Image 1 (spheres, rainbow, N blue to C red):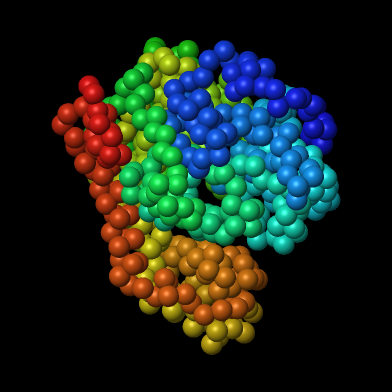
Image 2: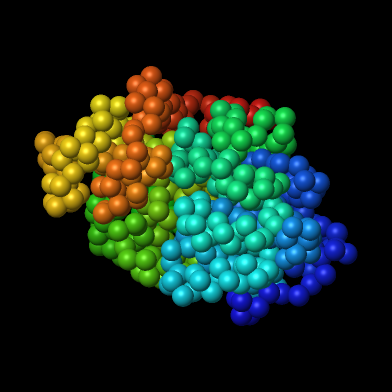
Length: 494
């Protein structure tokens, strides 16, 4: 189907059940899907927490179909559902899947050439499409805001909503502008969706959206996946890890499906890849340093069954909807309970027994502690960077990021606090952009929140507690599913 030819259907006469059957081919809803859909159709803001693989996307895609025929006096065009998603790589896959079902959808992001973006802007302004996928950063573009002013947004869907919360495990600075985005769009009905949110993160999601707790209905599906077997093996060196990986890959129970082995560091992934190839274990490797086309080819090969084993960093997985993943093995300790739960949720989506194995090596904690340090510069560091940008502006602009990095980190050791700092300077409109050359152009003072040592210390402590939760999980003497439920503030019935 041509992406610029909207599908034709009469949504006004449909019930959710009819739309489910006609466009998605299912005869019944799963879990709390229908409840979430009915809340949205009743124009009630809704927070949906649902395990990975349980069909969160349907909770906004189906209402988008049912709302598409709605018009208002100020917007003669059909209404549109705007989906804010954190990952560009997923958008095309999601849109392609919708198009094959006869649902009119598109995306606008930086992967498009200028002419393509302008064509899509024009199509959206003309009333085409029922769903539009964008990243939150798209709202930085005045032309996008102008286009959206010409459409009535019936529903704002915030996917991976934990990215809103600075206490969440995958914080995206631009997600903190969602209250502003909602105002620009006329405060539409909003649905926020995630697989992982502690009670604290749930509260922060509601607050960041500019809503009161009583304005947003919580639909919590729970987090239990009965078919997942949770195991932890304590290991002491790389040889021990390698043996467990080989045993898991060669286990007869895993031969009829696929598997993912997660690593924290690319260099560790590559080292184990070499050892596995020596053992005759065929696999592919996926990480953020690979060129975009190469990453997509690897992902496609895995999804289509051409490759059954992938060694990956956490860059791989978001949006991976493959039914037959028989095991997810963490060869290094992840950074938080939320990240771990989301990654193991990719296993066993077909409902069959699947293994989730964590190889716990205390030495891995040092790496994660370093990541936490890089993610939490203190106010002194923020001020130091700001002084370089203002008082040594000509040198910074002449010699660039590498020079600035050396001035700030005299030990010569790898240190990524500068990347964190520029992301936040950009978020709070202190500089023009988060990357050179715009990141060197100061346009405002440092905000108070970047100078508040108490607040920054609280953020650091919470990140450390999230990592410590993994330590507790690895050493938990009882049913580990009970531990996970307790962590997310849920009761557990064994």
